[in-house]
Image (tube, rainbow, N blue to C red; front, side, top):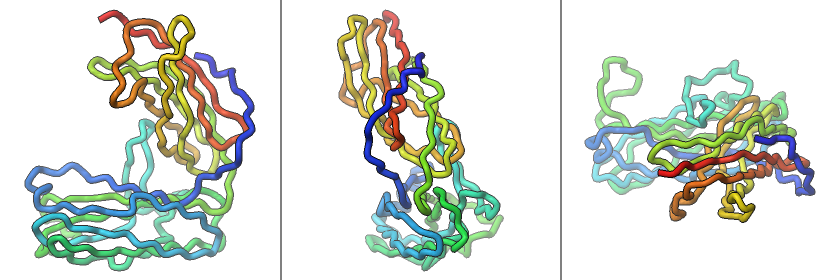
Length: 283
């Protein structure tokens, strides 16, 4: 692997900012899935805030199931493990990147009839003393039968559907400081070969990855050119980004030795460029 080939590039300053909203349903048994089918939109909202600012955003919930559903909303904190898996935790006022204390939900609980829709509004109030940085929290939606007792009873035993709406907020214009620290091939039996890039974000703002990967054969001919995954890297954290060597419709690479070059455009003065070798043995 060669990480010394960092090339300067003249790029516009495109600060990624906002509240990115993503919905991910927790696994549930088939019976629970049949009972609750709720669509949450929008999936992403971008917002740039200033200290002292207030912003209100609506999330729409559509009940596509044949039964009424009770929806309860609350605000939690979350972070990403190194492999990019979201990890949720109760709101922590000591977390320097938590925006959980800034949000107010209305309403926190409501009933949606079969085929019906409802709206949950969240108001984000940024403290006047907030530092320039990227912040985050999650609105957790839990789905219960319409006659379910009030939430919070430890003795309740039931299958609950759950969706997390992930919120990102950028206050001011914090500098982006990201390094590519490692690049390694990964071969897993039964899966398309991949390349794993390790990114270290030492800045105070979350960023999203973008760029290209080019695969060369032994003769130096370009075999494949692919877009890098668009995934978040949280502030002051390290993340492994798995980059597949082909799209859904691309055939697997044949046996041989390949040189792989990745170029990350992280909205910095220079692209982050690294290369590694991938060897695919005869099957």
